View (cartoon, each protein chain N blue to C red):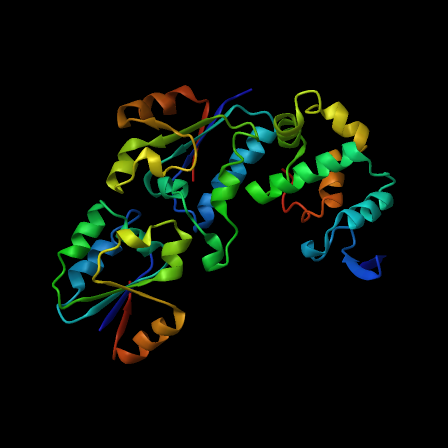
Length: 99
Length: 117
Length: 111
């Protein structure tokens, strides 16, 4: 299952809710303002990092660059993708949940 | 003339961030003593190194830097909101004055009108 | 839409006389645009025009009168950063006319 987040973790509760609903073998894709969850030293980054190693984390590179988040500060487990790769991810997963 | 405090609370890609900036520029153009406070996700507007062309947007960051030229001299940023997001003053593209949570009540009291966007 | 010819190139203007393609701008084009406003460009005009283009590159905004006056003062010295100086060079709506000659986009708001 692919979970997609596109809202900032700071503005409401769906970021946290998504993390609660995320199973150990599933994938999480951060789009648009959800990439703020990757800000270094933020609480949200810490909560992403304690997700089980079997959870695959993806983030849209263009959204990260647009918002001034430095790529070299990102944890290694986050895979940066472009738009065609996003389409691939959505096709690959049998179910997509957009929060 | 009555003074105005605009509290900008949303990240730069959200329309509300643009609206807060337009309101500040418009008010200042009419000679209203105007201040802006970046709070909550609004502090993300101040991050250095933004490249809005990546998502085909106009750069809000470039426009923000024109605030002093348009007559908005009082620019503040909520320190608590910065801390929550792991941000420090060095990452700020504007020379914004950090304000403590305890100061915010006084600010709301000080300005004649307060608009939150 | 109208089309002017500068150095054998056709350049499209919108109905208010702003460049359709901002990449078309050159000093020669500026001279033509100014003429349409009844202004003969001199060095004093050109330094304002170039400052305006820097303003746009930096802030991605077409300035209104007040910020323009302030910016010209910072860039070209306080004696030039006055509305009188700008009004003398670009009579009427100085900021708008100068923006047009500088090849900036039509301001998308009234600020």
